[in-house]
Amino acid sequence: MSLAPTHIHTVRELFFRYGLKSMTMDELAKQLGCSKKTIYENYADKKVLVHSVLGGFLDEHRSEMAALDRNHENAIAKLIRMAAIGFQKMRNLTPTILFDLQKSYPELWMELERYRKEEIVEIFKRLIERGQHEGLIRQEIDPSVVSIMHLQHTNLLLDPVVFSHLDRPLATVFHNIMEVFVGGITTSQGLEVWNNTKAQMNLQP
Amino acid sequence: MSLAPTHIHTVRELFFRYGLKSMTMDELAKQLGCSKKTIYENYADKKVLVHSVLGGFLDEHRSEMAALDRNHENAIAKLIRMAAIGFQKMRNLTPTILFDLQKSYPELWMELERYRKEEIVEIFKRLIERGQHEGLIRQEIDPSVVSIMHLQHTNLLLDPVVFSHLDRPLATVFHNIMEVFVGGITTSQGLEVWNNTKAQMNLQP
DNA sequence: ACTTTGAAAACAAAAAAAGTTTTCAAGATT
DNA sequence: AATCTTGAAAACTTTTTTTGTTTTCAAAGT
Image (tube, rainbow over all chains, first blue to last red; front, side, top):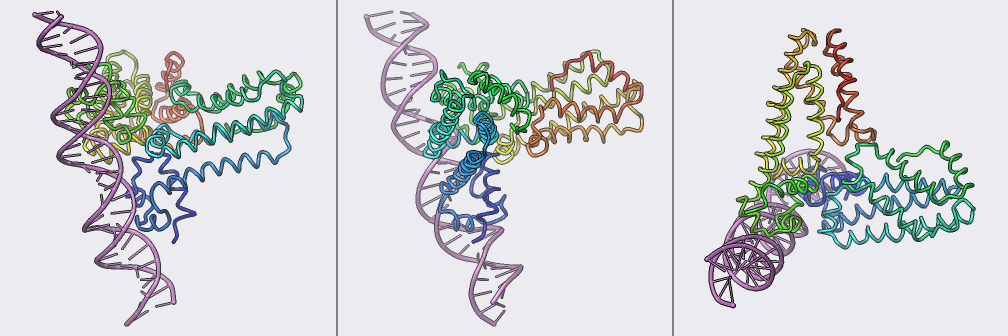
């Protein structure tokens, strides 16, 4: 009855690196150095295992968002951090795993879609609204519209055909996108705040 | 009897992006907008198709090497260009496709290995020797040893666990590796030549 | 000595993919 | 206009692979 806590991270790595289809249960057991029996004692079937891996992935992101919510930065700083965490997290989702998810685990694919389109967009939207109350983000900005716009920016960054051929670090592309985005939604006061905080916060893309 | 010339590139893209296992013949036909029948009219089976794709990939590289051989640069410049082409080419080989190749098409995997370990290393070795005759590369350097060393550098650059977490552009990592490598094998004359040519040639990583 | 454990391997059942054939409609040919 | 050809779409069979279960066996603990 071991496996669960330590090995699940290895499973995630393997799934994320090679895809769900290529990584069969036999191969998984071999890589983990355990028997299939042991895996099946902890997880009813492969679907449950995949579910657990992706669930853990989303939960991590959720708690990072929660931690972010608890800190006391201004709305602009939070906004940037949130975006940075999102990009950092989602870049693990390679074309292969997204493809396999979509094809073989459509309910999980939809859950991922829902998570991003509903939960994440909602959090982002509230941040925009808070920014407006703080006078940092312009009133003409429609929070619903720009939060979806941000989600689509994430998609762009992850799509291998959009920016990859530039061979810029993800950080550079990210910073450019955020410069445009933040510059485009802030009031002059917000821009000032942004320029001040920018120097202090160290962003991992 | 169409498909062959245009679509084979699409097939390569799909195989390379999603892996050989995830990209089934049904899926392939769907993506190509043709029927399986048409595919099977041009390729006896999937193995032949995969073989054709990878063969084309290697042939491209071979002819780039040949073109390189025909130009009239000094050995150091050629060496760098050769490395740049190699890196550029091999970065298409994602973990997934290498994994699938190794597991499901072992003979093709071995062909790829052989190509790199024999053909490429041999060409590189001859370049080193030429550099020695030109007085650009030190005599103490053993061409056989350093050509294998270079191959291993390529492997490092491609391995997702080695440099990827740095989030540097591939170009940067490449240039650093080559600085060390070239600096380490050249005579003082060679170094001078290298510094002169470096500015002129524009390297795509 | 006797359990327990779990890897390794053999196994059956199920699913999926490969490869083949049939159907059918749109274009070309006569 | 009638016929032929073509190839996508889909139905189908066969083969392969994978899943999930069971058995075996050896090393560890009791």
